[in-house]
Length: 373
Image 1 (cartoon, rainbow, N blue to C red):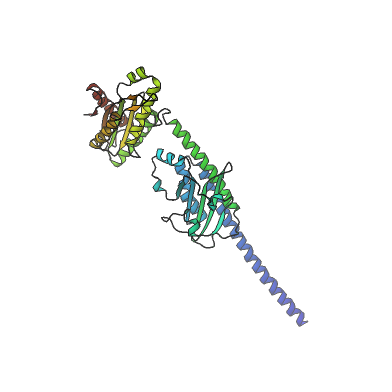
Image 2 (cartoon, helix red, strand yellow):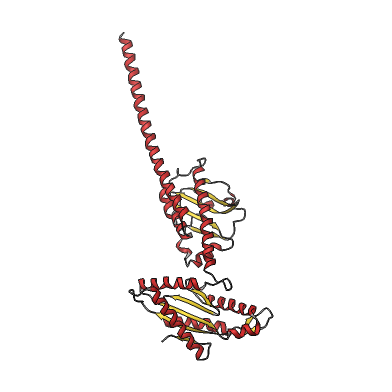
């Protein structure tokens, strides 16, 4: 009888221990489910940010800043195949210095026989410098484990999304990659979307003949530069450029040659500018150049370089006939603009004064650079 009671007590203790372990396991599962729910919620919020990005810069900032925070990653990079310089051109038009984004890598061509560029699904495992250093520049933390995720659109590789961690077990060979594949698909779609948006925006703000900015963009950008100059109390100079005797060129040689002259003038102006200066065709044969943080004396140097470059080298036409072209330039500068004045008023004043200076240059014989006094 005592033996039966002893056996029963042992079984009771075993059941109690098993029950305690089951409760602990259940509690662990509940905690894990709660953590997973929070991760999924944060991931959902990230995806909404990616999908809702209104421009390329907003998208890549979410990829490089928000994605690592939510996914507990130490570094994220994005390599894009930019064979036609579309991304480079887009960033130049956005006046963004690519060096500000070391996580963004642009390749003009896929590396020949590069295994990474033939991936069809994510590659996960230890970081190998010989294989992965092209994806993680030396200026960024060197990961211990990494995931390389191909981005495909319309059955074509557009780039690689790369995750790096300082934890060796964060990415291991054989681990499931379904989740990061879904994330990569969302990123690829969002990239295509914002790049197309930026291209459409660029087209709407570009003069279709000369390829430089149009009047709408110049007026918009001028307000932005005035606001920037007001905040930082920096100068802003404006050049108003007009092709001398352009009507005579059109009348004597035809509008086709006139269009060629407009394109060549735009190109020569652009060649004398800094990357963050901007030139636009303001109408007809008139161009406007905005020179941020440039004093009048330096604006004169830029204007004279443009004027001499255009005037000293004849323009070649399709008929191989050389055309001599000159321009007149009016200059206006504002120094540390008044913060209390509306930017639209300052912008109008800057343009009006540059136009007045241009009128003087025309009146005094053309092929001149005149500053508003």
